[in-house]
Structure formats: structure tokens, C-alpha cells
Image (cartoon, rainbow, N blue to C red; front, side, top):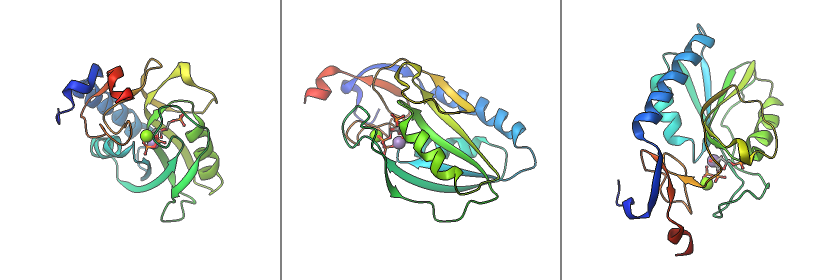
Length: 182
Ligand code: PRP
Ligand code: MN
Ligand code: MG
């Protein structure tokens, strides 16, 4: 576990649960987009592990783009301020765009991102989020594909960080309170 074991309070989703759900999502999305090429837009940095596994599970030709936006800095709660840190490298007009996110917390990041990407005239624009916290939603976002609805707890692993750590864990879990006070 990369030496993080002592920091983890409990495992919410195991590696096996995550990979199993990604296979299900990929199967469904492959049917929905049959015969088309999909432009995956990963939201850095959290979606990197999800994008990597999802693209391999999806039996369709894909292209990959990345966008970096930040709403949190290093704190654990959303500020509502979205900044573009890195834009797409290309025009997405006429393309079937599928945005990949690791988590929808308040929904503020994605709500802003969908407006931004929608204005670039893609042929279609949908979202696949691995995690969603229904109790933390501040703004409704139309999300077609969701991996897991989870409780309103701060989680790390599988791309999700606390102060940039724990992204490399293959599972998703919660941190012991002492980690936050250290
Ligand atoms: C996290 C997460 C989502 C967003 C969700 O990213 O990866 O992108 O916050 O929060 P929201 O629904 O309340 O907007 P973060 O800004 O921490 O950047 P990171 O992906 O680089 O960790
Ligand atoms: Mn993110
Ligand atoms: Mg983060």
C-alpha cells in the first residue's frame, strides 16, 4: 500500500470493486457510443488513474485530452473558485466528448467545466464520474454515468489526494483524523 497503511482509517472501495465497476461502465458506454470515436477529456489531476483504466476497458477507439482546473488548493473543502491551469490542446467542435472525473463533490468544478466545454460546440458532451457525493451537491450537474454514490466523507486514493498525497493508492479510503492535524 505504498507505505500509507498507517494513515488509512478504512477502505471504502477496494481495488477489485473499482475495477469491476469500471468494466461495467465501459461496457455500457461502448454500447451507447457504438460505431463512434470518443474524445476522452480527463480532468487533471484526480482523473488520471480513472482515465487510464477506463480507456483500456472501453472497447472503442478513443482520443485523449486533458484539462486542469482547480477548485480546492490544498484544503479539503470546496472554495467555489475555479481556475483553468491547463486548457485543451485542440478544437473539440464536432467531436463526441466524454468528460472523465474522479469525483463530483459540490459539483462546482463540473458545472463550470460543462458550460466552458459546451460553448466549444462539441457534437455531444457527457460526463462519466467515478464517484459522486449526493449529500455534498451544491449545484446540480447533468451526469450520465456514475460509478458510485458515496457518503459525504473526505476520501483519498485512486487519483484523489489530500495535500497532493495518496493519489497513487489503488483503492479509495478515508484518512485517520490525526493525518489532518499533522
Ligand atoms: C477535486 C476532484 C474534482 C473536484 C470535485 O479536484 O478531483 O475535480 O475537486 O469537487 P467539486 O465537485 O466540489 O468541484 P481538485 O480541485 O482537488 O484538483 P485535483 O484533481 O488536482 O486534486
Ligand atoms: Mn480534480
Ligand atoms: Mg484535489
